[in-house]
Image (tube, one colour):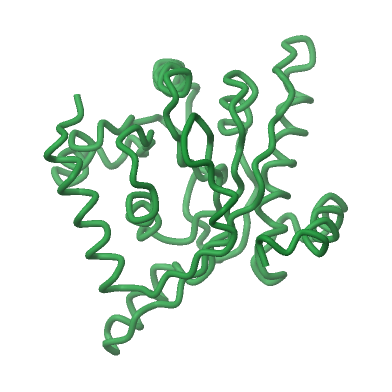
Amino acid sequence: MKSNLGYRLVHRGAKILTTLLARVEVLGWENLPKQGAYIATANHLGRLEIVLVYYLLDREDVILIIAEKYRRSAFWRWLARQVDAIFIDRYNADITAMREVLKRLKKGGVLAIAPEGTRSKSGVLIEGHFGAAYLASKSGVPIVPVGVTGSEDEVVLQRFKRLKRAQIVLKIGKPYTLPPLNNREREIQLTQSTDEIMCQIAALLPEGYRGYYTGFPRVQELLQQHLNSPSID
């Protein structure tokens, strides 16, 4: 169970650490729902992003998923207890973890997830996994796409060594929803929905960050839509 005191300490620590290490610019803040359940999907560049979640969201019902490998670390086990995080096996179908996430979403929680499943070593988008699409389709809650730049581990560390803060930009897109999951066409639908999630993120990133999704026509469609929607520019 989450400790309220522990959560407040983590939340406060996240704000202090982020302020020390980075200047954070948030674009499209008005697109972030103020209440109710939603899934925030973002690209994954560095470890600081887990801190950014609590730096940005002043809510106690944040659902955080942590890769099973971190359970071996005493620090990560402690952190997980404070925020009631869910450890998940990224390489096998972790039904127990997925059910727990869905249960918390139905209660109105906010899930922060990187559909790529791991940090991108190249710094550009890699192919997304089905997890986020499955959870969004099953729960029916809105998805809020987020494009992150400047949070690469190497960039943050190098600037810290020079006593400078990293310049991190978070670009928040408009919420959207996915159709309910049709079990008869499950694989096809999850593939299409995952592509949609990743293209939504790609359209919020500079071209050099789009990686695997650079040539997707859907990205160009979304970019054109953004030109007519100055709220995230």
